Length: 231
Image 1: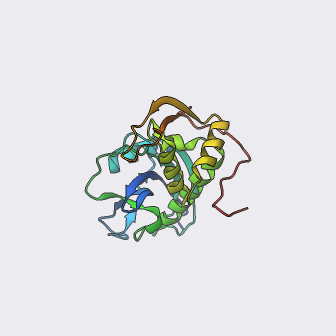
Image 2: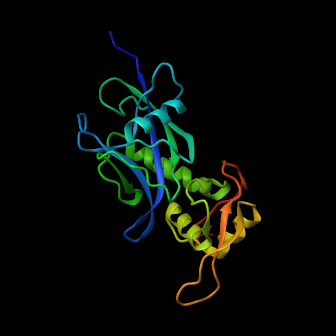
Image 3: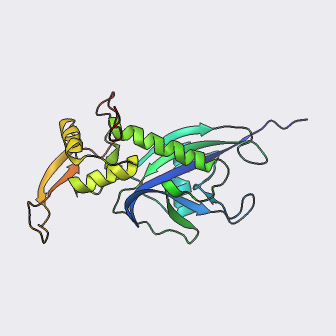
C-alpha cells in the first residue's frame, strides 16, 4: 500500500541590506546543515509545522529557535512549494515567508548561521535557492508599488543612503533625484528637519528623512521601477 500522507514545514527567507566589501548589498540569512540529508549545505531557517500553530506563528518560532532572530520589521507569506520530490523521503509541503530586517540591526547569530549576499549564494539545500530567488523577486516588485522599504531602512536616513539601499535591494543603480520625487509625491517619506554635518569638502548639509508609515501599504498599484535605460 502506498503511503500518500505528507508533512508540512515552514521556511523563512530573511533579507537585509548590509554593508559588504563593495558597499551595500542584499543578503539572506542561512544556516549550515550539520546532518544528512545534504549535510554541509546551506538552508533557510525553518522546520516542521506544529499541530497547534498557524504558519505565521511557526515562522516566528522557527526564527527564534533556529537562528535567534526575534524581531523582523516585516513578515509576509511568500508561496507554497509542493513538488512531491522537493525533499527526499516523505512528501513535505513548504509554506514560505519573506522577512525583512532593517539596515542598522545586527542580530547575534549562532555559530552555524551567517548572512550571504544573494548575488553569490553558497551551495543550497533542496529547493531553498529557488525560494530565495522568489523572495528577492517579491521584494523587488513591492519596492515599485508599496512602501516596503521602510522595513529595510534605518529610522532616519539621507537620500543618498536611501538611494544605495534601493539599489542594493533592486540589483541596479537608482537615480536619487527621481527616487526622491516619486517617494515624496506618494507621501512615502517625510523630512525630519535634521541634517547631517557637512563633510571636509563643505557643501550643503544633507537633509534627513523617515518613512511616513511603518506598516505596509500600496502607494501606486500600477508603478514599476526599472533599470536605467529600460523603457
